Length: 409
Image 1 (cartoon, rainbow, N blue to C red):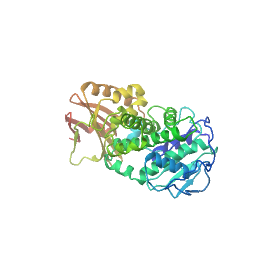
Image 2 (cartoon, helix red, strand yellow; image 1 turned 60 degrees about the vertical axis):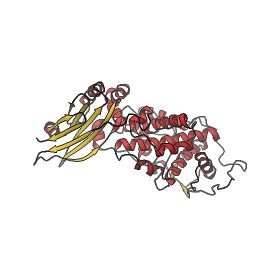
Image 3 (cartoon, helix red, strand yellow; image 1 turned 135 degrees about the horizontal axis):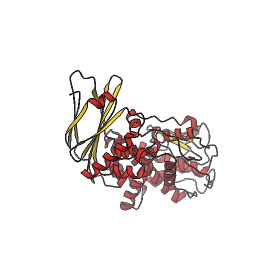
Image 4 (cartoon, rainbow, N blue to C red; image 1 turned 90 degrees about the vertical axis):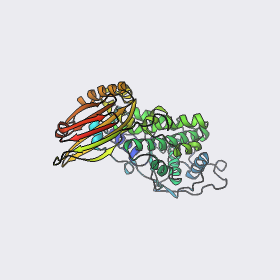
């Protein structure tokens, strides 16, 4: 279907909120046969039979596609019972982000260039597969979408997703890493499938960089699509170095994933550049209305995305590099909200570079009531922002690895 700006915005929400997506732009694909011939249908032991297609039809044989995908991954997962065909409006939703993301500059934006023709889909953690093949019913692009979703289905059936998330912290940074590994493995496996069976020259890994470029720097969609682009680069690099690109070898990455988005972005092993020690203590005066209500670790990928809207992607990438660890604390007093974002860096130069970029970025941010940037030693920077009364009453102190945020003292 042809995407208008609102539809494209909803598309990106699906990519990260509904499970997984495999959108495709352009019309240069060559249609594959709508159904397999007797010679190329799966007939081996354990071949799947009659995956039901509900609420519509597909221009490819899902049984054949599943058997090929499962064989490529070395899996014995049973096939799904059904695939549900849905209209695009029934599988998309408008994106929304937490308030801190908006304050930092990571917000949903309209695309700045056409997204193109889109096929869409997602797989839930319960193994349900929903596809929107698009009005054109292009067989090659539908097959590519279906392979991507079958990889996710197998990930869920083999409990790769839950085990992976169990090995990572329940933070923004941990979520980025988990999604990057899952999507990176799916994109890599889909490319391997297309290399072996496909007749369409466009690989799955070519889709997401082009889609990401359609959205402005600093947008939520660009951050979300980085999980596909950077995740694929990470998986392909690790498997290419160790296992000649065999997608079945992704098991090793699920079992020993990168620990941070820094490791994903820079292709580092899980034991390279581990998070530096950082302890943040909160102290509030008795009777002061503000109290700490939550903490999070945002990670280098988020820092890069936040700064990009204000200083550009190149400077943002440089300013976000060299991060050691971070902790963001939210404070609330009835309707008033404030944040203390503590970032420890690898060295004084890294801290200075971030500080300069952060001042430039937040000075130009509309909707930020107040902010200030503080230093704790040479390696740690604290960004205090939000409600003006909080920013005026909050103070920071301590050492680079042991920071205290006090309100009302």
